[in-house]
Length: 200
Image (cartoon, rainbow, N blue to C red; front, top):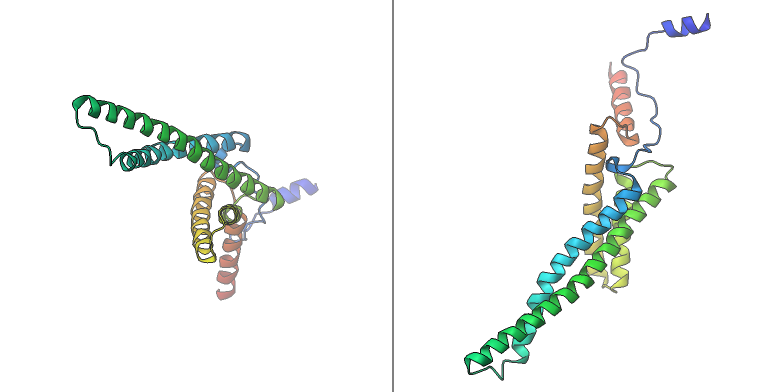
């Protein structure tokens, strides 16, 4: 009898939505065990490409500077000169590719690990706040590791804040598009509905 009465109760369409449970679904619908290796791999590839181009260019400039006082005078000499230059450029590019790829992969891993850790500390709530904390934390660690002066560290923190906020909001937009609920969105909706109710 009680069940039939309770089922007959009509819900108020203007009632505020209930408090949402923690958004425990994986970010971007990708489990952390897959997202972390994918992020590290992508970062290493991007860093390797940047290191390869920058390292080979700098190695070429260095070779030209070191041999500017003894330029060849014959065609055979020029052939050996360019061959040796290409070797130094390739070696310098590969060396810098591994160096830059490793660095970028390391800091990318730190970003995603911190983001996931903050999510867990907050009880499984996954939104842009955790991403902002991760961005600020990683840029702070990067500044401390490189011993940046205060002004440079502040600029790095600003970049981390903007990047974390943008990436976090993009992830939240994807979650909303997939029909998931976010705590701060429900909070804003409840405030708007309460204000409309008071005005009416």
